[in-house]
Amino acid sequence: MQFATRAIHIGQEPNLKEGGSGDVVVPIHMATTFARKEVESPPQGYEYSRTGNPTRHALELALSSLENAAYGLAFASGLAAIDSVMKLLRHGDGVIACDDLYGGTRRLFEMISKNFGVSFSYADLSMPETLSNLISRRTKMIWIETPTNPLLKLCDIRKIAACAKAQNPDALVVVDNTFASPYFQKPLSLGADISLHNSTKYLGGHSDAVGGAVITNRGEVYQQLKFIQNAAGAVPSPFDCWLTLRGIKTLALRMEKHGKNAREIAQWLERHPHVARVVYPELQSHPQYELAKKQMTGFSGIISFDLKGGLDDAKQFLSSLRIFSLAESLGGVESLIEHPARMTHASLTTALRTQLGISDALIRMSVGIEDVEDLIRDLKQALDTIKL
Ligand code: P1T
Image (tube, rainbow, N blue to C red; front, side, top):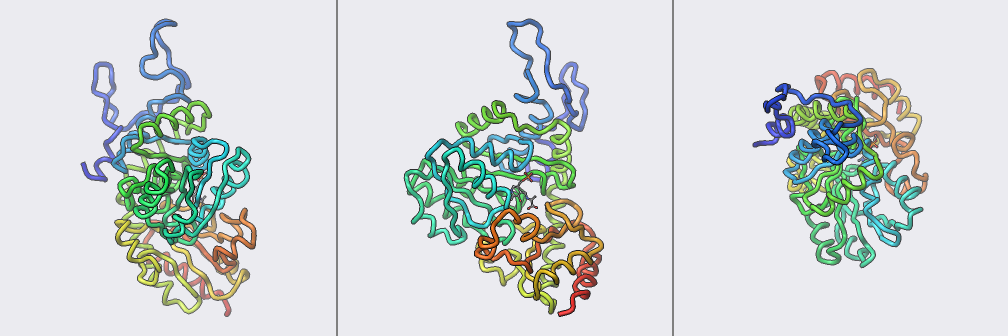
């Protein structure tokens, strides 16, 4: 089956067995516990909803199928998924992470995981050769986002996985695939061990369900994570699983439109006199345009750009928009826009933001699936309010 068919059917087949009601949509199983006949008899499939739930199970099957993988697990949020993956590590283990990361991921690494004796080093892994100098026997995980949040740098998954396997086969390569979505990028087929998603974004797609997902082909990694999912308990509610499943059904359609709208807007922004730089992987000006074409089958709705001017101009522009909502998050049907330095990446120190290139003039937008003419008109009127 092709992607769009799998997204609608895998894990979601109507139950036509004796006693099944044949629902064409997976029901929301709200029960927190499941009865058995006698104390000694095994549970009839499910036992307790943290351990397993039929609606979550349907979502987990759908998640695995989106990346042609053997296993999927759903978590209560993107950070809950990341924290659960961190729990695979032990005191003394080392992680090498790309330097440009969602601010909350870095905060989790630095302020929580570190306290458990895990060490982190950060490097610009958009230059994969930097990895071979850093990797050691202590390295147990390589953590990349690609495209990165918020600067949309790309990491060459195939090269990074090959380097990791050659120098330390014990190190797991984890790709946060949130910005690309499974529709445009399949990290496991490029050599990664784990593909992770903040399903709050493109998978759910409607800004109404917080969630996280882990997808893998590694049986032992899955078993450990399934244990952690139950033992630590960061599970999503059945209703959120259902909303995410509902979102996944239209992922292919939505991603095509997000990409088409974003391409037009990125090209339009590049020509605007108030804009200093536009970062979008499908623009030929993107430093990794060639890698983008090789590694991804398309690009989502995220564009980052620097305005000419400073913080006051950015604030003026952002508060003048009418269709774009000024809000954190991304990947929903509606267009959102935000100021990384003051919003999603405010937990980084000013020095680190400066080093990474997250300036006060940097804007990140998540282009929705509205009519692109309306979006461009809105951007134009807001840019026109800036007096440079
Ligand atoms: O917000 P949560 O569901 O916990 O997911 C965290 C997360 C993980 N990975 C990436 C790449 C992310 O972008 C995020 C969350 N990001 C935002 C809320 C944001 O506006 O960038």
